[in-house]
Image 1 (cartoon, rainbow, N blue to C red):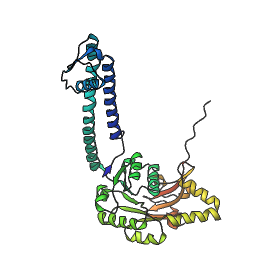
Image 2: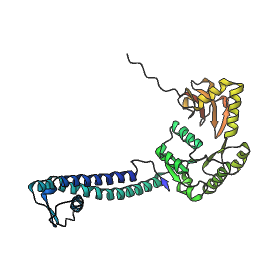
Image 3: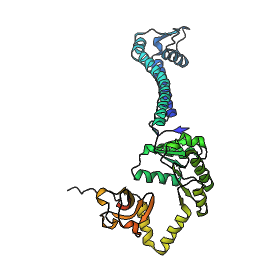
Length: 338
């Protein structure tokens, strides 16, 4: 099942509001008729009780009108002209409007789904919307990736609601199933990020993606244990991030070299000061040393491989190189008002 970002309030709440409005209109009409009950004639000639008032209002607003209770006084007829008749129209609008809203919402959802299926391409699939999945989405958005090109695959209802609340398209189901990944159009995806809660599930997802795409889609997976990283790579993952090993190295740095952990946190935290970024080498930069540029370049990516500045190959920028650099990520300061 595909869940799109919510654009309006929940249909159940909208229906509840309409029912509450209809009930309020009935109660207000009963109060008006009860206040002027002496101006009405009952077929039993015994006057109007409160139940008679409810009966008259219901048959009047629903346009049934049996005629056994009729307004006879001038004031009662005036109330019917000025209040009961408009209330009848409003009551019908509420009932018909609710039906039309449900039908319109179903039609709109169907068209939206058809349009999405026609246009989805070069997107990123996030398998798992836990802490790692949410962080991956944040990193994509910080680097300018279009939110409409991110699809979340998740089984948890709570995580699905969080994803749609964040404006993401979410698919309910297990990423280990081919049908779920096909629903996410995995064959036309740019990359698949595997951020599941267990390494065995990550291996199954990687195998399924590789089988469906014949290795044409880049797979990036997170592993809890370092010993599972080779298995994930054998399953088809192009890159494996070992969370436990990375966390252990950061803990070691925080003990042996505390300032380094501050630098790493600054690089990984958006809006703090520094951030890692990558861009294509410009024409006038080709042939120059990366150290000569105003941009603080720390590595080159050449034909899909990382080239450090310490290597001889990294001494000169070549055509087609990608520059990995550190950029200023501080928020733009607002000039003080004089």
